[in-house]
Image (cartoon, rainbow, N blue to C red; front, side, top):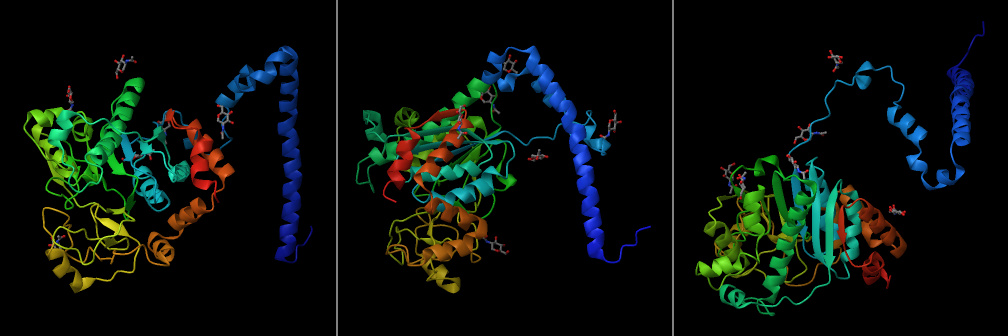
Amino acid sequence: MNFIKNPKEILVQFSRWISDLDRRLLLLILLPILLFIYVSLLSINANTTRKSFSNFGPFKSIFKNYSPISHDDDVQNKTQPEPKKGPRIAVCLVGGARRFELTGPSIVKRILKVYNNSDLFLHSPLDSNTYKFTLLKKAPRIAAVKIFRPQLIPETESQLRVLTSQNSPNGIQGLLQYFNLVEGCLTMIQSYQEKNNFTYDWIIRTRVDGYWSKRLAPDNFIPGQYVVPPGSSYGGLNDRFGVGDVNSSIVALSRLSMVPELDSAGFTQLNSETAFKAQLTTRKVPYVTKPLPFCIVTDRQYDFPPARFGVPVAALSSPGALSGAKCRPCTPVCTGSCVGPIMSRLDKGWSWTEWANNTVQLCDAHDKWENGWEKIFDRVAGKKLAAVRKEVWSLKIEQCINDFEKLRNRTASWETPPVAEICGLGLKSK
Ligand SMILES: *[C@@H]1O[C@H](CO)[C@@H](O)[C@H](O)[C@H]1NC(C)=O
Ligand SMILES: *[C@@H]1O[C@H](CO)[C@@H](O)[C@H](O)[C@H]1NC(C)=O
Ligand SMILES: *[C@@H]1O[C@H](CO)[C@@H](O)[C@H](O)[C@H]1NC(C)=O
Ligand SMILES: *[C@@H]1O[C@H](CO)[C@@H](O)[C@H](O)[C@H]1NC(C)=O
Ligand SMILES: *[C@@H]1O[C@H](CO)[C@@H](O)[C@H](O)[C@H]1NC(C)=O
Ligand SMILES: *[C@@H]1O[C@H](CO)[C@@H](O)[C@H](O)[C@H]1NC(C)=O
């Protein structure tokens, strides 16, 4: 008997034995396969092999019935049922991609990956940031993508009567653009449902510029209720997020096509939030508010401290649910007992948001984002999300085009300008 003296030697012996075994196994496996290929090639017309290798009958059938050798009987137990899927959910994502490198990864991680039977629908206007949607390659399932060149939407008489141009430099056009974005997403979902002969259990409506600090919890899916966040209600209902079944979502998302109905009901001078509320009340869709862990990342500048009808800007790092309040990555200037006095001055029916229990920390947002905001963001978001941000920033045009081609290949409905143009718009100068 060979006496093995030390562990190193055991290892050497062992690896020799393994590699011997490897060779024998390889031969054993390879021989029949080679024989099989040889016989198969003889029996078919050489012209067809090149074209349809994947449809090649014999290969198809062996690979279909082939299952890896396993000593675990459970794996091969065919009577075991398929793993159960959760409720069918359509996630409608609308808006421009401005800071999508910050918000996108959080949406993928905390909404799309949380619900294992959800499909993404993206509706967005083309601009120089559209290339950032390449990061959707990390999304588990994408049903439809529509990216369009922005166009002026003609204004109808009833729209001019019902909607207000207050707070908008472009008249009611800005409102119409936003409404079109939202309703277009509903249209995409409905057409996908018809094509595939099924209906979703839930539709989640959310925004490209939303940063999610925690996952969207399952208790926000309430039968018979449309769920929206509290606060930021501007005289109506917070319209920065919503979830409900298909029927109530049709009402909530029909933002353009319901205008004539609101007109008939006598509504005038509506902003986005009051129009949203009017849609639900006129169709008698019950709604409920629930705190939600996201904020709207904005580059806009706002006076600090905010006046009664001003806009508070929360730190992205705020500990609580911001329910769609505006935010940016900042070093908060106001925390703890400083927050109450400032937030209490805000009109409760306007830009106010829940701040009790230290949910909110405030930024002084009167200037552009502070130097070093990237580090602040990375620290708050964590390593994985920070890595995606950096990936997007270092993206090259060729990689961008390649990523989009891959995305397109797994998206049932793809309506966009040429991907070379999308990538070129944002990355040409880099
Ligand atoms: C495997 O299938 C048999 C019936 O063929 C069933 O009785 C048994 O419970 C199954 N085992 C598992 C682990 O599902
Ligand atoms: C999907 O999620 C549901 C809960 O929504 C769960 O019951 C189910 O086991 C999950 N299925 C898979 C395959 O992960
Ligand atoms: C659609 O699905 C229903 C049942 O879910 C079925 O009865 C019907 O035949 C299907 N229609 C088409 C066109 O496949
Ligand atoms: C949705 O509306 C359709 C008709 O508009 C109705 O047949 C269906 O029962 C409704 N579904 C639910 C869940 O309320
Ligand atoms: C704040 O915390 C207290 C105690 O946990 C709780 O009763 C109250 O509802 C909370 N307020 C808000 C607005 O979350
Ligand atoms: C996408 O699919 C087409 C044909 O279906 C194929 O030619 C192309 O190589 C695929 N592109 C990528 C990036 O997978």
